[in-house]
Length: 205
Image (cartoon, rainbow, N blue to C red; front, side, top):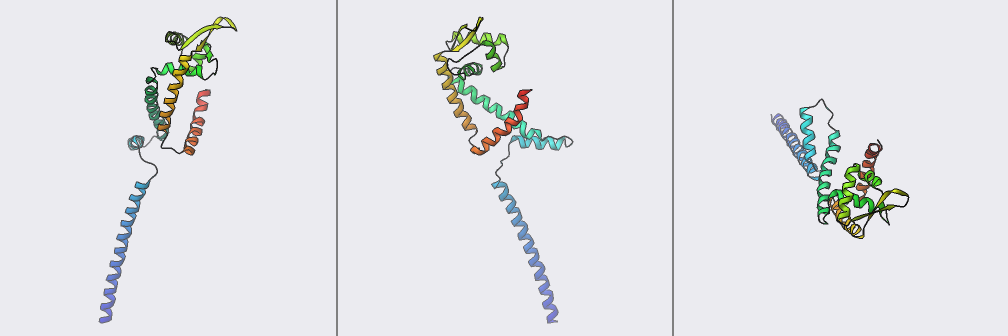
């Protein structure tokens, strides 16, 4: 009897021990899972919520492109806000910066034909003529006859225009560095390469 009772007690103890170990293991697993979520290097954002909602509502559709392109769209809005802020600090609108920057990138004497300017800024001929007129009135560019084309003119950046666009560019680059501050330099290079691969055929088309 004593042997049977001892065996029974041992069996109950063993079951309790097993259950205790199982409970401890489950708790440890939950703790590990929580720790993994806290330590995750990929924080969630609004795009994750958007994609999850569409996946739930339309499981028949592949919504993975949103993971990339919705983020690009949102980044573009943040960049546009920073651009406008940087340019406004120097009394420039975005289109004014675009024209002045196209000229400044040419190097001395920083000039282009109106046709080259409209191709660089992707606007119509009428729009470009109006913009050159306004920039000339502000003293930021000037027109001069094209020595290679008697009927043509060249648009030249003035000293005031060069100073204005250089200062605005410096502020813009500072804002852009802040936007990228969460990415290490190696990741920035990788991202730039991936975006180039995505964009190049679109620009070529």
